[in-house]
Length: 111
Image (cartoon, rainbow, N blue to C red; front, top):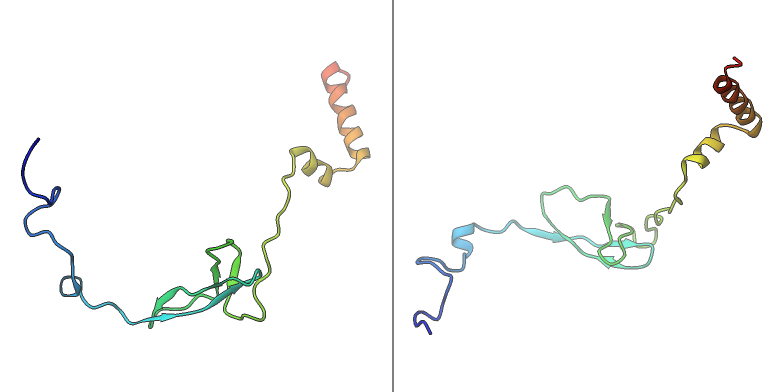
């Protein structure tokens, strides 16, 4: 068993950095944000920083606003659409039949 210092993995002069080495911390302000589920989050900002209008709730991920009585609406979940669903939005059945008939004629060499 190796003997030695009880503090391992450290170097000479290493130690906790205090305010003297880092400088003074900027003055902070805490701002409350509320989401639609009623969660309140209070992130801190520098006093001279621009405060955003919206903030993501750390508990549920929904958008949160500064007005407790009127929080932002929850995000809408749009279901996944297939390529065929997008095609059907652009074309009706009559157009589809016409395109299919033209493609079959082209394959058979009738066009």
